[in-house]
Image 1 (cartoon, rainbow, N blue to C red):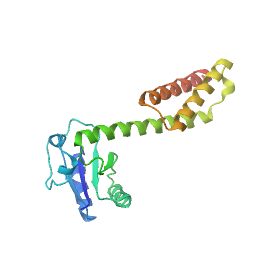
Image 2: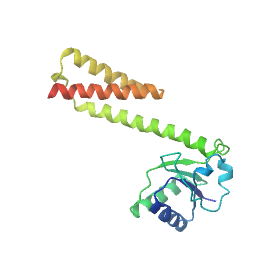
Image 3: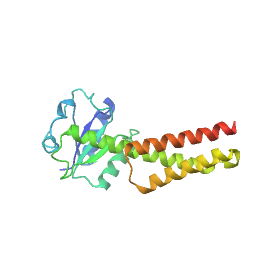
Image 4: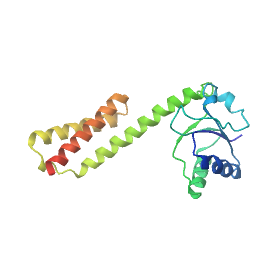
Length: 185
């Protein structure tokens, strides 16, 4: 059965999303903090909505079962058409995670989501550096900027980095871009 468990939605989304999903042949069930220590396997047997408090995690989550990428795209398109796009974290139930508690799943996917957001941010910072006129910088600052740019690029290109390395590269790129901005003004 194509089913979506959701956590931490706005009240209007809690009303609209399940009706859209039902029209498309999917079942949506709301979860709350009381469900965090239950396994996914157990939670996918739940048939009624849990309307308790959702305070432990700030992000909203969809946990999906037996849905294809195409199913998800159709659903997200329907939400967009209803002028209620879903911007939260989406995760599929797998053989690997079905015995995890909901808390473990949310912690893991939150960390992965944050890493992905940081990768996108560093990529944007690198792209924004393409318009920098290095001739406006002193030689020493120009070399520092080039070095920062190259090390950030290589880190991102490697695909192998820790959260700390990524955070440091983001900060170094922000600092380098700020140095350029100050030199221009």
